[in-house]
Image (cartoon, rainbow, N blue to C red; front, side):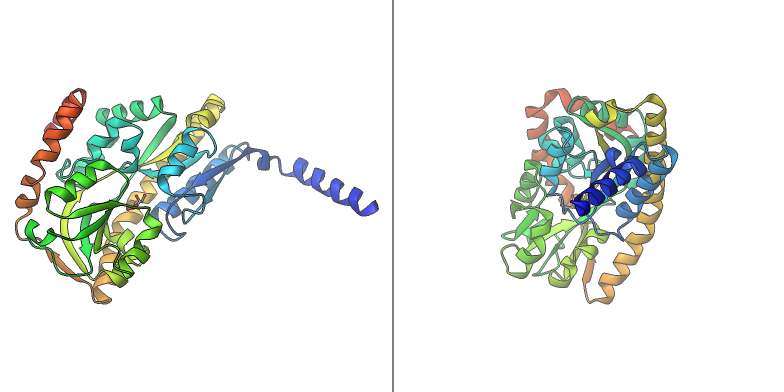
Length: 324
Ligand code: GTR
């Protein structure tokens, strides 16, 4: 009895002493702790906790321990999770406008992507996300993605023929690989290493930091620079969570998210170089494709099919292409 009473008293005392526990925000992250996005998310959590004096206490759960990305998107939308760093790739299944960001070669380069996402066009994507239960507070960098595989250097689209590639969960990527003559398998990120190792797939595609941190470079030694996708990532909060905040706390949370994005982008630039050096030192063969235009031209049917199925999104594509 005495023990129970002491324990209860202790628990109550803890509740009173640490009111922030009731205000914990659960945050999903796919990456390990030392990844630029993870460091930025931790800085977001610290800044929000400090500046709201514990009224909001974000906790980041790294390494996708809370589930794979498509599931986590659903959980943040329905308020089961409070915030996350999401790539816009798997978002296309839920927010069709974001599929525009998954069109291969939609951006000329990463700088253009940032200008677009930080401006009026980015706001259009945020508006589309908001309608589906996600408040995009800031945009992270995810570099550009290229193909890697276990077999051979890819120099022309012909080299892709017959190879099996893992893609993120979005039909556009299946079409993209189809047009190059390969086969695509949508698969959770966490399953790719083993699938490469056992030969279930021949390759995948990603930026240098993910190719490095996932250890895919250990098993797929050919990295061919195609830069076919430049996909922004959001720091997103669940609409339900957001709506429960006071205006003053919204201002604090928004500022922390923008600061986190600035930190992420700086760390990202460093990490891209470090990861490239690391994988090269580990024996990865990196090559530039001979004729990038051949890869771009092969995507014409993907654009045509997309515009036919989504005529309302054509102006968004044109506006991005016209922006500098
Ligand atoms: C990474 C991205 C992750 C995830 C992963 C993947 O570059 O940051 O959110 O989308 O790629 O390929 O699944």
